Image (cartoon, rainbow, N blue to C red):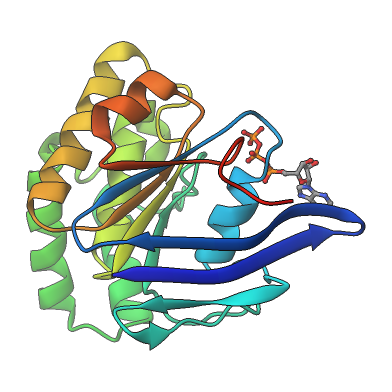
Length: 212
Ligand SMILES: Nc1ncnc2c1ncn2[C@@H]1O[C@H](COP(=O)(O)OP(=O)(O)OP(=O)(O)O)[C@@H](O)[C@H]1O
């Protein structure tokens, strides 16, 4: 379970949100919606540990997570809007790199897990390809596999359908639902209300549910 309490963030004099409280249960899919410029990405970056909050606390399964913007652990797996894949590495290498380098996983174990994730996400034919050879939907599934390889407590996506056609969007919906059935907790920032409706157990609207 992810619990966020009294979270606040300002840029100079602009309050983006204050006293934000939010709970996501295990295996739940929470969508964060709201108009452009309202603070969704700011929130995701704080949850991901990449940006400092001004106040507040966050616990994942009872453990405090650092909100100073300098978190080191991989408790929150992030799928960035532009995927941020390593261009010089193959799909499989993109997935095994962090487990080996950061988690010090044995090479064989990291390879086995990568093969399993590659299979699960329908990327078997792309395993030895490089990011430039992939479609947007395929890159996104590599980003999801790469995040899952670190065994995070929660997956957070920034605008996962942006730039995807209808078929790829349906595929993302399928992946999110499949992960949900495996008990993966997911937080999804999106401006696409139809997509949000298709996947959400719960929706948090930054346009209406946030104090400023
Ligand atoms: N580093 C920064 N310094 C100052 N202001 C910022 C900074 N980053 C974002 N902002 C401002 O904070 C507000 C929220 O931005 P944010 O990117 O979080 O919105 P968003 O809801 O994700 O928008 P979009 O859907 O367009 O991506 C905007 O007014 C933006 O201009």
